[in-house]
Length: 96
Image 1 (cartoon, helix red, strand yellow):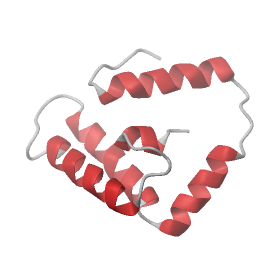
Image 2: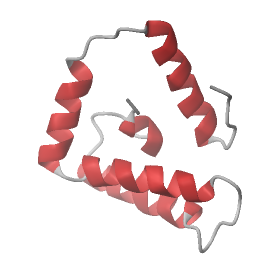
Image 3: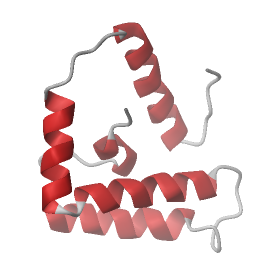
Image 4: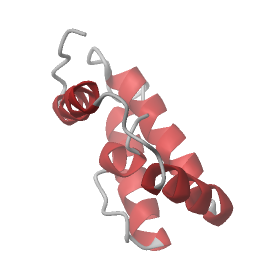
């Protein structure tokens, strides 16, 4: 499961205005019409998906509950996925 807060680079306690401001900045930076770099379109889609969930109070509450109440079955795999998302934020794709 992707960490939507990490995709946008905001804290879980970020306000709606903070999330909107960061989303607009990232959307402009990674929009396929403005950024032809490899991976920019995928990053734009991830940012848009994260914003769609976190900007809706009901979906955000549901997401927060699912993140806070899940059981980690593969801690090492999850840690690796978290690191992959951090590297992906900076345009570096790690192998699976």
